[in-house]
Amino acid sequence: MPDPVLEVTDLKKHYPIKKGLLRRTVGNVYAVDGISFSVAEGETLGLVGESGCGKSTAARAVMRLVEPTSGSIKLEGQEIAHLGKKELRPFRREMQIVFQDPFASLDPRMTVGDIVGEPLQVHGIARGSELADRVAGLFTQVGLRAEQMKLFPHQFSGGQRQRICIARALALNPKLIVGDEPVSALDVSIQAQVINLLVDLQQEKKLSYLFIAHDLAVVEHISHRVAVMYLGKIVEYADKKTLFSHPLHPYTEALLSAVPIPNPKIKRKKQILVGDVPSPVNPPPGCSFHTRCPHAMPRCKSEVPQLQEMSTGNWVACHLHQGGKAVAA
Ligand code: SF4
Image (tube, rainbow, N blue to C red; front, side, top):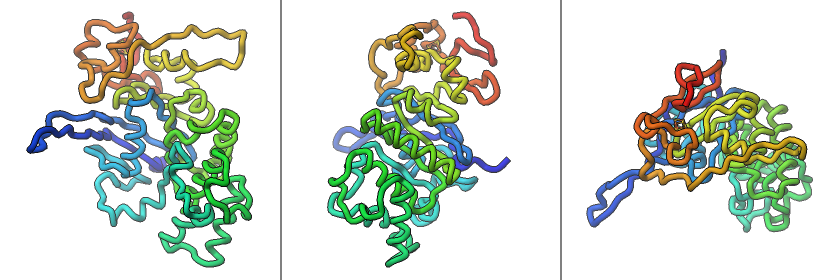
């Protein structure tokens, strides 16, 4: 079997909390606390969870935009977790990120043609008329017109601006695109267009996506597999069909119960999660979800549940499911 495009093992990102005159470390923010997953060629892995669960930090750590505390990140089999700036440069071409707010990530003083062409120039790949031709091609690929290259970001709608960001991400022909809530800031109808564009591009170019989102309906549409994060850890990791039809973790169940079903005849029992996500500075002992879990048992307060494989490729970390079997609460 070929190497996955991305393989992440036991990735951690802890931010030290410093206090006092001597800036002593008095604690840590456990933003990402030992997560493992992989993304194959042409596959989309959805990474979901409430805000504050660490999914965006995980995305930034994978991209090496923040320094991981420990763990392994392999891009096409090559370890990149601890490479220096210079050694990392060739790998940067292979992985690109699309952020949530397309307006904030586009320089308002540059034409959108210059923005999309910038990576090609920086990496010395094209210049002059070849550069213009390549940028025109990228505009067409993302459903924009080549004549629009001369315009500035403010002359576009939100959806068009996100298309520009996608064109820029595609410029270097990457293997992996990390989408950090790439459609969350868009209207619902525009979201669908951008998602469909991403799906078409994936099929055409065999792109791999790590797709971060809090909206499970969006994740269901685009992902092949889904990892659910809670307080810096993955609590369930399964193929999309299994996860959406038979969620095993009580947190996944609660998230899914909030997803609207587009059929008024089908009713789903809503599970309201009480309280907020606890602070990652001081995560609860045992299962970090026990403060909000309707099934919490005494052992949940002291024993950390490990991820266990329930069926091929489907994992859950919960004491209700042990040794591949469900146990009574
Ligand atoms: Fe709930 Fe316990 Fe499972 Fe955590 S381990 S999700 S508290 S039942």
